[in-house]
Image (cartoon, rainbow over all chains, first blue to last red; front, side, top):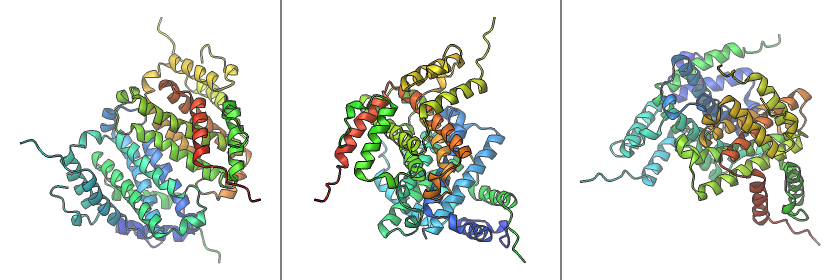
Length: 115
Length: 115
Length: 115
Length: 115
């Protein structure tokens, strides 16, 4: 990064700004079409899948520190491409998630408790 | 959602808390193993891919409002599963992204400008 | 299909020929670049994942007939796009699989049995 | 492979038989639940996507020999997991593809030619 200070990345907005600067400095914007970014995003999502493909669901809950660090790295990659995709399409990911949770709350109502 | 007010979702931490409450109210935690969550995440990533699979890179940059809304919905789904995955593994996604950007800045140095 | 008789699809070569005819009749070849085809392939792979995302590994082994039919449909979609991708790149998928199995046999030797 | 001769792999049935033997010799069947196999399949599909994520559609059509060999390797991996998935669920992939093409021919009729 040139001017971006990584310590400024405290939330999604800071991440978005750091990524804009990162790409501008490397002249990568021309590669960052939505078509290319969704491909890159899905590749990173698959790298997350790869970590758990042969594990049982139970085993996937108890990973060691080396695995946790590797998974954190892939989570970062997904979040980075997701932020770049949202930015290039002028979508606010937090607002989108908020709207989706409201929609999901209607779609999946809380079951009534037994008396 | 029972007690969670969607207006409280202003950042990833708020999103995480809302999702915790959402899942607890529906007793969904038992389904939310990392193995299952990475599968769900990759399915949502693919739904993003589906929106752009036959478009040219150029066409993917100029989508209409209906498409933008549909894409925002899928971005929300990816962010929701990513937040749940990070939460169940006790990973801070913003910290992970910050560390990754520092790593990437070393891996891909800014090209020297010509004199 | 115009002239292609589906009953002629008895193997991967017959499938390839039927798909060539299918696409030619609809003028779809221009969409079938490797970039687009790998996207479509990964979307269909994700539709397979979707069928099993919340199931336990054990449950995934015992699916009912409706689910089996739906899964067969997705397997068909993956095989169709894989055949089209291989065709457009002039790759023989069976030869590729044969070479890969030879490679895997070296990479993962059969464990010695105990005396 | 122990007894399987790779030269016997001439079609999907031969591939299926070779894979059965390969897994039996390594005691891998217990890992080959549909849930695990669809995960592995989607990871290999993503490795195909990775080869083309930054290429233009046009560039994706003209790959060099090294890239073609790498892509053939990934096509093999997808075909291998697809064959294993179909086998464990007792699905005939060619029959499924044949049925799907008949369905698609109805869904996407051939456009009438102008007089």
